[in-house]
Length: 249
Image 1 (cartoon, rainbow, N blue to C red):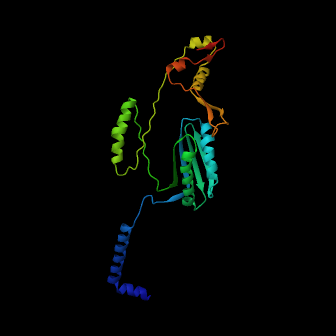
Image 2: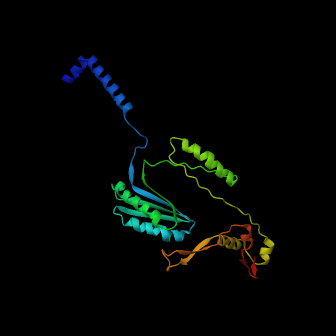
Image 3: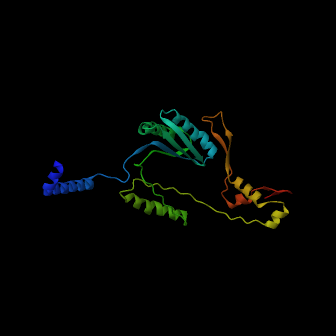
């Protein structure tokens, strides 16, 4: 009751106190340091490996599996998930709760050592999951002459992007893609007892590569690869397609 009587009698004083509370509160909110994505590290990491144009089976044997075996020996690693494709390998790691930064330091040292120890690695990148990761932006340049596009990317595009203060690094990569249209003579195919799917499968296999085995007597047991990539139109024309009557060239 006494408090209520004091508030009623001292209306001006209570009003001034209320105004001061609002002012100080507004100043504190405006001066408060705030970020949309504050720095935060998670208990997980990733490893991306770019290798030579090797088959997925060979990359699995020479890069992915040895890397997994090294990482499994690190205390604090709970789970490893890997995906291997032609020319690349990707690993996703899960750490014990609260040990992300500590475990990642060991993973980073293993990755740096593997870059020179494991054969066939062109580039290897690792990072810890979190809100402090850099943002990546991808830009494609296509539809023109390869030499002109390369000159444009190196001489104009890359320097301009590197001049931006927000850009840390610019990496260029490119590849020439050729396309060949094949028309089938249905009458000739029917005459020789061939099917379009069968012929398409033979052509597809002729443009692939495979690992035939290992040379166990040599250092690091290099793989023996069968490379039959199609590079010219003549390579396609010279493919032998088995038919019911004879081989069709």
